[in-house]
Length: 190
Image 1 (cartoon, rainbow, N blue to C red):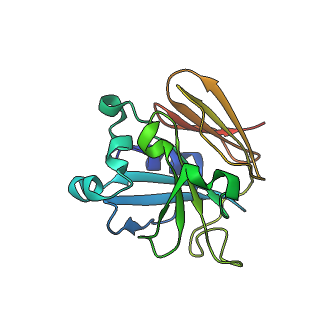
Image 2: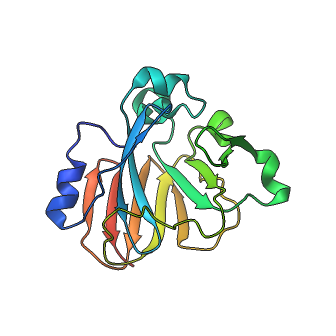
């Protein structure tokens, strides 16, 4: 989650990173812009309509208001289907036009990052088709917070957690480092 009136987009542009124009999430009360890499992307989301966000089961308004709610302002999205033996830890959210498995930490452990698994059809694009692609690959996600994300087994960039105040570093193998907000940075790795 980023502040809608923050200078994070300008900071990225000044550092040479390209963002797409983004999308409004109908029914969620949120909007986004994405920093797209070859195989992954960083989705920067903010609340655009607080009443709509409060009425949505995802309740992203709570994550956007982390100072008051203590909820993690971060989320991690994976592709696939949660393993059968872990499905009880997820609820199925189908209001987006495709199945989205939402980890129940959203309800019981909001201090943890929101974990979602996008159950997209085989062959679905791995990134937004119209977005400009930045050079490099995502190497790691370094998360600092009160509790780690409840992630299922996955292949891809590493996830590293340490205890502390909320902070997220997205580590890439190309491009410049830039601090986007007080809790979010893109870091040229490793």
